[in-house]
Amino acid sequence: MAFVVGVKAARGAVAQRQEMVPMAQYLVSVLADSSQLATEQEMTAIRAFNLRLKAEGHWVFAGGLGSPDTATVVDGRDGEALFTDGPYLESKEYIIGFWIIEAADLDVALRLAGLGSKHCNRRVEVRPVLGA
Image (cartoon, rainbow, N blue to C red; front, side):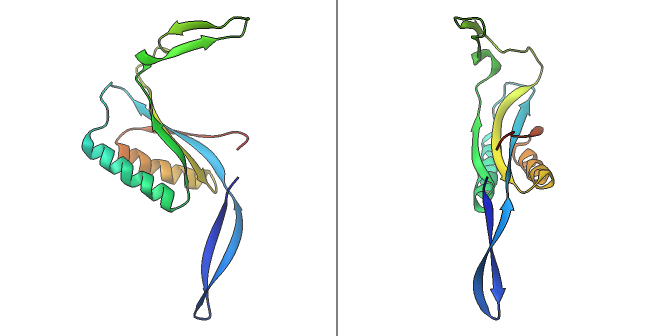
């Protein structure tokens, strides 16, 4: 759990004030319906959005993912692990990338996800990370 530190002007001088605002973590999954990767223009916008997340204290981690045909499903529930090539689910859409962000609440996470969707030019899904 992270905390936001604010700066407040007091009588002409700048005084630091710590606000103990608990931050929750959210997974923002980037959804794709084609195998086309981001264009250079989209990558530039994504990098700018990442810098904004870092500057505003929301950044935890982000990454892109290989296509579903690069996936391996691992099932070790009944003893020795069984490995199967390909995605767990066959679907028209799949997760092509993600951000893990910190936000004070779901409303802030949704606002950031809207900006992320705009910057990467794809739909996104937001889910809270449990136990964060």
